[in-house]
Image (cartoon, rainbow, N blue to C red; front, side, top):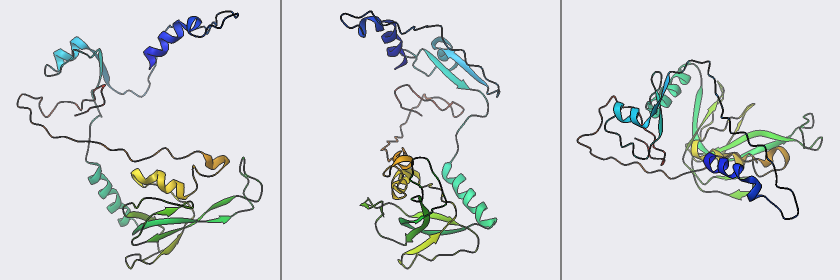
Length: 235
């Protein structure tokens, strides 16, 4: 996109010319950007030749440049980290309730002023309705069922949902952290379906991904970096 944009700007006087008017001058200055860093991340920029020399197993025919992280860069098991964080939070006093979010309840708060909202009409989130099963519903419309959610509650507040009954959870602050379903839960909170401040949706949606396992006898060793190709493929 950047390469196309640069070429378009160079010829903007032709692309955007109008009969009877002077050619536009967008004052494009192709002097480049110089980004300076202060945090000390150790990375190296490698040309195609340097990439081939350092990683002889890599096909660099259509590669011009690579950025290689030298320290403090890698990957980990996110499920193990999530499990450890949950276990630690429980040990320090947090309580978890397993259930499916059905809908939010709202409460009018006349003492709150918000930009673009008529005085005395602000409705804030008040409670969350959860159930041990059923379909996800919210914002006055039907939505697809989604998996069980974990709602973290303050210490001493308990709700049982394993019997399938709908139970309300009252909170002071709600954090939407539902993974790929966060956009759906946000719509239940009227985010993206309301007006003014609530007209902007949460840009999170489900995307299908494909993961393959392949055998490569002469492939790179286990100390090779995580490679992200410009095509979007990674391994």
